[in-house]
Length: 72
Image 1: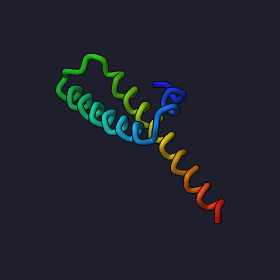
Image 2: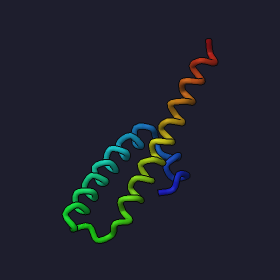
Image 3: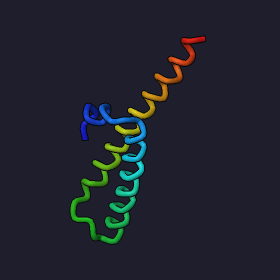
């Protein structure tokens, strides 16, 4: 996933996406542990996608907090 596409999504949608991605990552880890995962690059890709979503969510939380501090 590209960060540009992720930034267009709403915060609630990103939170749901992060949850589903974490479940997928867990599934990939279990398949890898039991030698059922064919493409092990999915592990790294999933971790990086989760990190992208977390970064955008963190940026949004920071911008909300800084805008609240500016008003007072």
